[in-house]
Length: 215
Ligand SMILES: Nc1ncnc2c1ncn2[C@@H]1O[C@H](COP(=O)(O)OP(=O)(O)OP(=O)(O)O)[C@@H](O)[C@H]1O
Image 1 (cartoon, rainbow, N blue to C red):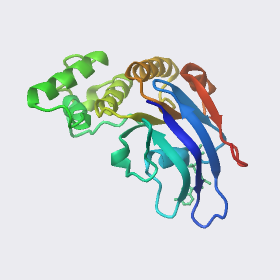
Image 2 (image 1 turned 120 degrees about the vertical axis):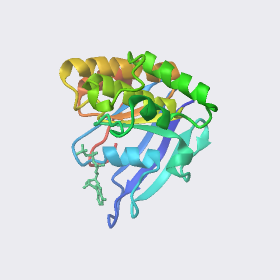
Image 3 (image 1 turned 135 degrees about the horizontal axis):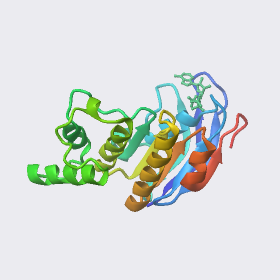
Image 4 (image 1 turned 45 degrees about the horizontal axis):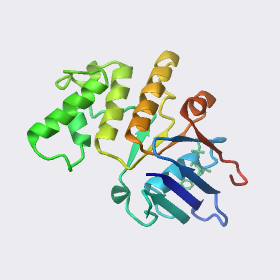
């Protein structure tokens, strides 16, 4: 189902006019890119969509997800997955427990949960690595495991904030392809903040350019 932003506006604390006004439709499996200069409000837009705006930020307009108006729902109730620059895995948990942590509560029973984690690891090229300490994985393996953890939560949409910017060039292309393929396969809409035009080209979805004067 699609993600629709309808005249979504955010006004910063003490500001008298909105930072931006955005209208955008992202279809299932599509990755829309959000671009624009530093400070223009790209991360704030993701916060507004995800329901993570800090207190004092005012939001107007609507966010529709799977045909539902989620504008006034909590972040948890929106079920929107997040992926950031740092592919963070909890260092004190094994790789398998990291993925199990993300797993949707809808998957019931120990055997079913273990099987879901094993399948996700296999899909990430990490078959049998359940017991590994995250510190022993390569950067690419960690990034793939972190994406799988996010997807195991069965998100209705995905927000990506410069997800590939810390990866070196070769790994970036590989991780892009891996990420976009999984988003397409799951049929979830995604919104990606990036400074890298190659990310937007590879994503092949709509490109939203935020500017200081609006969209
Ligand atoms: N807690 C806050 N209180 C007040 N203003 C804030 C707060 N957080 C961010 N801002 C302001 O909101 C504006 C948008 O910030 P945001 O981080 O969304 O920009 P961005 O486009 O993502 O920038 P970058 O590309 O540098 O990450 C900036 O002018 C910033 O100074």
